[in-house]
Image (cartoon, rainbow, N blue to C red; front, side):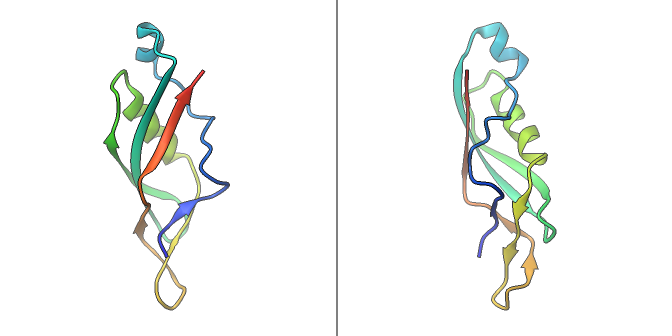
Length: 92
């Protein structure tokens, strides 16, 4: 089983990057994948796509603070795994 996000996919707590304030951008979506350790913490985050204005960096930093359900091997043991793509939506 691949890892997942604890508490669902709503990440409204991610902060807008300063560049978005300067450029007056009020909506953006960044797509990331997270490598999750067996304890449910993020090991690394890769930005798959982002619209610029600092949103990729903001999504990455936000993802590093989240908790995840770890991937499980065939025997049900937690292992390192990578999430499916996650859409991180920024809106205000």
